[in-house]
Length: 129
Image (tube, rainbow, N blue to C red):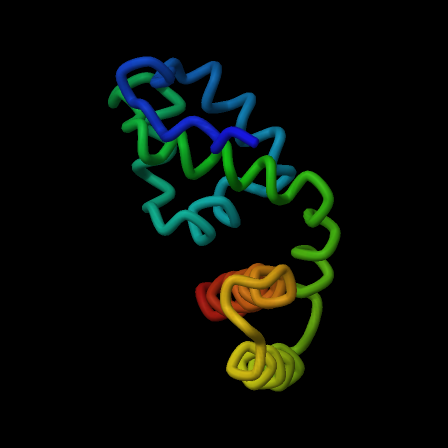
């Protein structure tokens, strides 16, 4: 089985605002939620969408992969945001303990890492409100 192609900014970069807007729609997240997930400022995202600043390939790549990952997890993310901070912190602690026991790079380990990312994203989003 061939390895997936490596990121290649020269061949795959599409900085057009329309393309970035479509990607954001595919994530199912609001602009604010997306910015928390990929750690960029909301004002900067608006500049990309208005075409004032070309979108860097790393941002495009992050949004593409987030859209792919969240295809089945948008509802999960919204459910996490509805939980209390205490519930999120308890679940994060549980996942972190499970990660310590899991064998890296098993499927279980990768699933736990993704779950931890979702939890931490939700905690960060709730703390910015």
